[in-house]
Image (cartoon, rainbow, N blue to C red; front, side, top):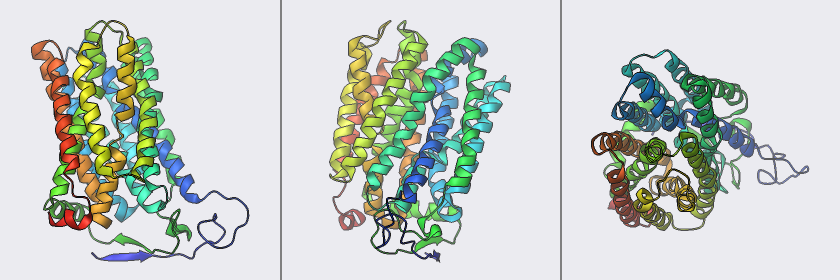
Length: 438
């Protein structure tokens, strides 16, 4: 692969890991970059938290069916996923700062324009395409790319923390948006998301840096200088080439298949339909939104813990356990819905929250371990499969509700698929050589 090299003189005063001289305690710039990225991911997560609280208001105002609104969510999830591998290649080519700034602008535009819509196709365009492109350019690919560039030590932990940022965004925005929808209408909620996304843009532009070598630094935990390489070819061509090469290996299909089921059982099903499903059983929408916010609280704990474990344990085993436990919880969910949040439902929310995106750190670790320098782009394609699975689940669950009058079949089907994902995870070859020749 053609590449040009970025070099820089090592700053020996930048913390204890980047040189032999110490001048007091100083925070490595990697942590500042990670903190800025965390804020950006939290801001972008705002609109990702809105589908559940928007479905009923849009249904009441415009008379659209849940399948119609679910289709718009599916388009969003599809673009969210399919953008990821190209975004990873664009970040390699043009830098994270430019790509993330544009992504946040698209999120703000798509959210703001929805207040003027009158037809369902406009919902698909704004909510589906624009916001899908914007959020897909960040999300998990952004977290994985930043961690790979800026960290050697604690890389898995950093991915876990950044991934948990999405849950933090859900935790912050869901209750606020639910209250806004109830008191001021869904348009006020959409404009709140627009303002939040735009507020993050200056932080990204002025504080985020693409690589430590630009500042004459080593990645955190690195013990020697490693010149960074920036691909000089087209980002789209590289993304397609990496997909072609990875698709020839069996681990890619295990990872992509498992992550498709991951997306179907989280964003596509629970993230989109939990609130209206609870409302079907008499629960207030604000109460259901609050339960999803609690999922966000425990998601933070579970994802950070998963990142820590990914630095110390076999990622394949972690994935197998996560998927198996998630499947078991979904099989019992239909019996837990009631007019109020019963203790059994709270137990489910806590358990499910711990597992929500705990799959991300071990999946990213396996992509990096098996595919080396192309691991970030491969993870982008694996993440695309996650969103494709989520898109299908969002639409199929809506159709299930429209035709059967309840969501039970969707919950049971997702539980069975999670068992399949657990098996596929355990079948991934242990070492890189075996993986690439399988």
